[in-house]
Amino acid sequence: MARVERWPKLLHGPIELSGCVVQGQVDQDLIVLAATLTAGKRSVGVEVVVNERGVDVIELHPEPEDALAVLRNGFEVTEAPLTPEEFRSQVETALIAKADGDAWIRERVPELLELGTDPRPDLPERAAQLRRWLGLPDYEPLPRIPSADPLPLVLPPPAPVTGFRLAVALSAPDDAIWRRLEVRSDVTLAGLHRILAAAFDHDERRHHRFETAYGGFSVDAQSGEGDRLDDEVTLGQVITSPGHRLVYEVEYWKHWIRVERLVAIPRAPSCLDGERAAPPAECEDERSYEMLLEALRDPDGEDNEALLEELGGHGFDPEWFDKEVVDERLARLS
Image (cartoon, rainbow, N blue to C red; front, side, top):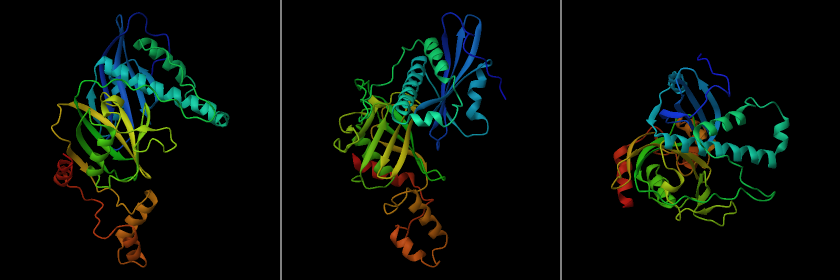
């Protein structure tokens, strides 16, 4: 196991940032942001583990390459380089999400803090030190009132248009159901919903919602969740660089979306790869889908015929995926 440096007083003077990368697994909502920090003649590796949008772990390594070994050790990972500014932006977004989440717990469910000792009690101190090294401003969690959700963040103006390569996967079941897509950054979230409906073959009229670092967006801003309209924001306003993520919900199914890399602006959305068919519309949640899979293993079993009829299992192959068919559906959107 790599030795971890003690915090916080080991780098002094101006910090130079280099070797920035983002790593992730295609079927997991977890990424590692890694970079080399250099002050004078000393260099260390910084490893920032981001889970569910917020920072989960911050570590320093005396050997900079050790910061990249976390996911490489036995896992198949995707990796993309980041500019220093992209790295700072990624880290800042994740630190903000962590601070807001902690503030929500303190204000809404303080009894959780009394259930046990925090396994990472020094994480706030490490986060503050990392902010100073990266030149990031201090951050106070969003103000709240007892009966309200967090105030929505002000959306940044649209950036120059680029192309995004996205990895999109259902957060359940265990066998990953995912697609790799290329889209324009100026597509609205409403337009992205139509693309995802085509990629996963579900009815675009189903209720959907996007959860981002800037709050929620849906087709119905009067849903009571404090959402804003998804046709009034572009994808490039809520995610900007490799590693940035958001959550996409379709009724009771949750998907995560991650930017894998920036690409040339595509003429039309396209599917590059994927695995497995999305659950039929009749499967409203993970439990019903598990029941369908069990029935498919023994279609002639007692009561399974009726179950297959009820859950849309006739003619359904959970292992089916055809990139050309998905691309044909995407082409019809244009």
